[in-house]
Image (cartoon, rainbow, N blue to C red; front, side):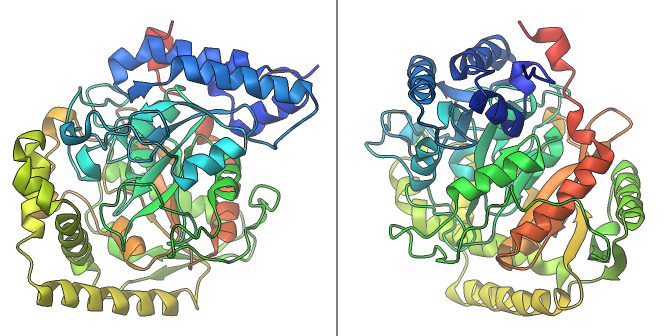
Length: 470
């Protein structure tokens, strides 16, 4: 009989799915282990804004009965996940992390939620997020905390997703990314965060912050798990006309750790303002790729220093278009950070928005040229380890606290991911970012998988499990 290699709450989706398929693990037992973990740790971490306990247990029993009857849905059958609280879930509150929507309960599922449940996933609940997916804290409730050190920030806006996956409160999650909001918390929590190509995953039923920059993607503990979830959520959706009709690969089945001859471009722009521990970790990652046989060369992105500004103009203007009426009519129900940023979006002129979009078009052309020379672009995910919560300033437009490395791939509609890359001297996680040309997630996943299997950093879990787990 197969036996788990980890505690149930730290099993990968890949391994848990294999055990469930073989009849060696009950979806009910797995779900109950996560619910117990949530009960013990959520009061400290504030990852979940809504726990769907009774319904999740009922779903788990139904999934187990299906297997008993000989009906197996696939590798996600019986896997407990949680969703960022901007993804509609029928009968479960979806609040966008904002008091103005505190009592909102949708009647239908978002496409991404429906696809995951059709694949057999069990929804444990909804995860805390920055208010309306902007930077900063949630609009109500407590700050989410980093399980590696609860005095430090987990990264946003998919903060609850990053913390819950890292601390073993769910097997995987779906986050959203407008300028790094999947990859930042992945980096800060030592997990994998994948932003797919724009149009790969439907956004129907998902709160829009910026309709031209928003992406949805998986946040997991391993590359294999990200590949499994990506296959389940990808594909054309008539309810979202931005989705692509391209065929969906079996990303998990096609995973390979062979990267010999792969051309990797190291993004030189990002090495100018990095924390020493981040720089050291990335330099070591480059040596790992060279040792695996990859061909490494430097690359530079033109206009890099102003791309963060272009991204900000676009998403703030589009956010004001989405929430301007709410700002005017219910300012008392919106937090300070979103009010300031939201109104800022209303100050940009049409000319400024158009100029930002022109720069975006130029960036896509420049990235296309770079990807004619290399298969991947390598960079740090963030320029420093996680900050202390009491030192974090959400008003990032006024100070150089992060690089444009994340935003450039939103602008260019490219897939990008963060994979664990090491730890600072204080034991805080550092992430490595890899990016590929549009619709080339398989190359991205393969390279990250090779790196993951060589370094095995994903096997390290936060110390909070030893001190505060029940």
